[in-house]
Amino acid sequence: MEIMKTFGLHHLLDSGIPAIGTVLAFHSVDLMEAIATIGFDFVMIDCQNAPLGADSVLSLIRAAEAGGVAPLVRVATRAPEGILRVVDSGAVGIVVPSVDSKSDAQAAVAAVRYPPEGIRAYAPMVRSAGFGIDLNVDKYIKDTHKRTIVLPIVETRRGVLAASEILSIDGVTGLAFGAADLSMDLGLRGNVNAPEVSEARLLTLANCKAAGKPALAAAGNQDQARELINLGFSIILVPFTTWLIKTGREFLEDVKR
Image (cartoon, rainbow, N blue to C red; front, side, top):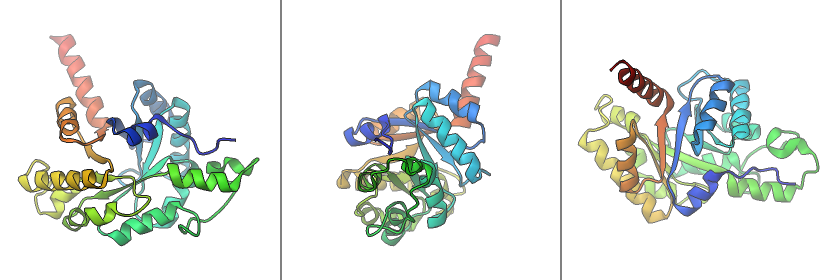
């Protein structure tokens, strides 16, 4: 019995073909289902910057699965308790904020892996384990360790400089580059286009390429997405509100014109 689900995202990450996803920070199952019909490769459920509780996250994961889109969760913190809840609920992977060191990355991987490789509490009755029905424990653990995506976000000066060490950890899928928070850490107050941020973005990408692992970056529009892909980023994140508002405005302007 296949319990740990595989999505097209897994194939894209393995092949290096760009994966395009969006962010959902609202508790709306209907909206998640609608997003899934667009054809995104993944949706990142945002628990860091949105007031989403455990029940909301579970509902959104179910809706994403039903629509055939891979559900990732950006956890609020690196605390293993929070990570445990989302992976037990069935998240395909986690996006982990403020990973500044090799030890931070090791802790994130340990939180999604069962002993002896990690510290994840084993509960056969949870959703990720098919509620324990006809559970082949060895296969389940093997598949979980292989398929669970772990994307640390480097979003501080320290994190960018530690990128190579972070990527060296077995179980780290790749890196996400956090331009906005990095700009704050550098004292640039949200200027994500500053030369210092662009330099850090390229350094992060270079480290990912050297490690043979994918790099994620956010794009605000089609041109930015194409630019990131041309640079070599293979996971592109488009904030849903940005995309929705831009598309809506363009639609209204075109009709009114």
